[in-house]
Length: 158
Ligand SMILES: [Zn+2]
Image 1 (cartoon, rainbow, N blue to C red):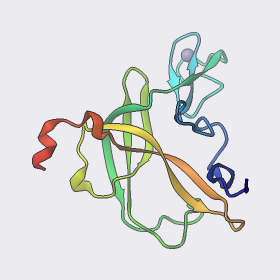
Image 2: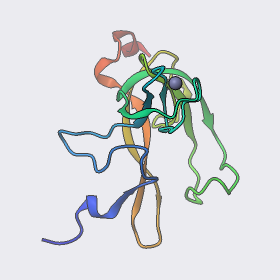
Image 3: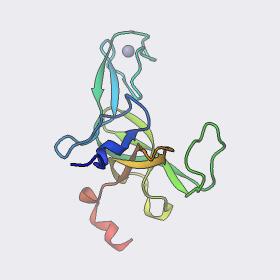
Image 4: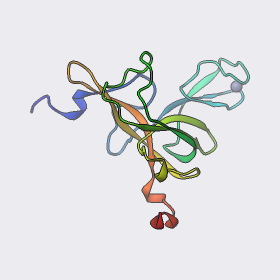
C-alpha cells in the first residue's frame, strides 16, 4: 500500500464545521448546536445561545438536504485577507440554504450559473476543493449542490 490514498491528502478547511472524514455509509454532515433550554439551532456550533443566553447546548448534526432560500454570485476575487482561496479565481455562487425546521446556512454553491439556480430549489450538502496547501494537501470545504434526485419535472424544460 502507498500513502497516496486520497483521504490522506485532504483536510477540512476548519475543525468542527463538518464531520470528517466522510465515508460511503456516513456522508459529511454539518456540525451545529442546539440550545437545550429553548431549542435554537446554530451553525457553526455556538456554546452560548444567542436567543436566550443559555450556556446549555448540545451538538446537533444538521440535515444534509434543504432548499435554496436566496443566492448571489461572486464574480470577482474577494479581497485578501480574509479571502485565502487560490489566485486563479473562478466565479462561484453563495447562498442561504434553508434546512427544514433548523436554520438558514450560508454556503458556497457548486453551481456558478445563476440561470441554473432558483429560489426553492432542492439542495444537498457536499464537499468541494477550496485550496491546495504548499505541501500538496487539498483543503476541502462544504457546499450545497442542486439535488438532482429530488429535482422537480419542470426542470426538464429549463
Ligand atoms: Zn436558547
